[in-house]
Amino acid sequence: SEAVEKEDDPNFFKMVEGFFDKGAAIVENKLVEEDLKTR
Image (cartoon, rainbow, N blue to C red):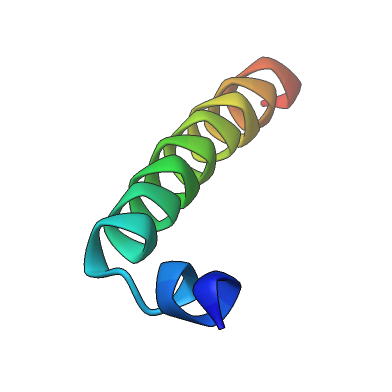
């Protein structure tokens, strides 16, 4: 039951959300760079 409690921890979700946002931003920047190179 401890694992379930940790999964429901809002801080855990915020942390994952933050990592996802950073990752998405990095991927987006790389895609834009590649797009500008090909033009």
